Image (cartoon, rainbow, N blue to C red):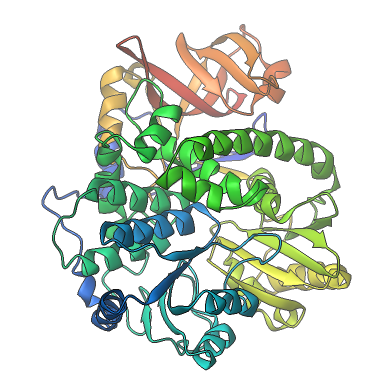
Length: 545
């Protein structure tokens, strides 16, 4: 049975530590975590049959008919990493069969998320008679009715939460609609991969390793639970990233890889942010071009990502001071926030204050917001609350990440309604203390290269299978200094082992080398010049208990 100790003393970053196994553990903790998380990898495991989607055959027949009749086919995607990797897979499918589809990725600022009538009219003017959506469309009832009125048929592939009934599309490929498939947690890129498998009639195709890798990147990027097909896709996708043929995706991966094999964490922090940067700072087609053609588009993607990092850090420094941490639901709108940075700021504030955040960009008579939440609070339930929904123009998303639009004059009422909705459920700022979950205390002698390699058997890490965090009690810290272009990171040694604490530079002034500290960290491997050593990634530090 799982148990924990909640220590009363705050850490140097102001968190309470929840330690699930407070007695120091050895190597056996990995097997305990494996059983606890339900990880039982079967090397022969296969993806489920894509034709288990009730309307898959109908969709395949319609696409094949359109290809045979040389209809103009459009792919309507999304501007995030999931939507872009999903779009890339379908573009690659049609290109393999000698067809160049029309691609529409919405501009985050000008169009926002999802289908718009103006975009549909544009596709009509290009002679499109079939639209395939990826990572969008399941709640676009009015827009799909409009396409039907124009004589355009729509095949929806999506995974977002269904609002209301099934849209009146020709076919809907969705993990839960019209009936569930074996894995209800597929992301948009995962659903697209299932469609491509069905279109290829289950046979391997030229470049399949590229599409598996794209599906894995989208799966990691969209933070869906790494269970079932998602775990299989990511496992295979990470292997494919190490054996890519020459081409744009290999160039992309090689441009960000270190000296070790790519991990799910590498994908999450090195590939996904760059794909997202295009839609946040410019236009998502730059990311799509980087995946499909590379070259100047890839160089531009790197530049935009650097620009995004600098811009968001500056916004955080300026706007973070405006956050009122006494509220259980953080609500903030500001003229300097852009639609592309709202989600990044919301993620930072939610992590920092351990409560849901709604951060909005003000665009004239419209506010465009991103919401990020904590595991205990469903963002979509909050937005669907009667007192909240009536204040919104539109909303949609997932449990932990959502988006909405509203009239800027409603910001005060919205803040009040969201906080009241949480209060009705028993949440308050006093009960929402920032907590760091720690899997187990470790014997310092257990921090070895062998242990770090054993931990990799739990990978790939991600939503539903977080990389374990361990407590190293009563450690001597030394050689601490600030690193990074902004000197925001902390480099140090923990009991003699090399360590890095990202964004922990602010705690340097509290450290010394003559008293013991408790350290919460992840245990990893650093590869350099063909030599592997243990490296600790410090999450938090507190004065030893």
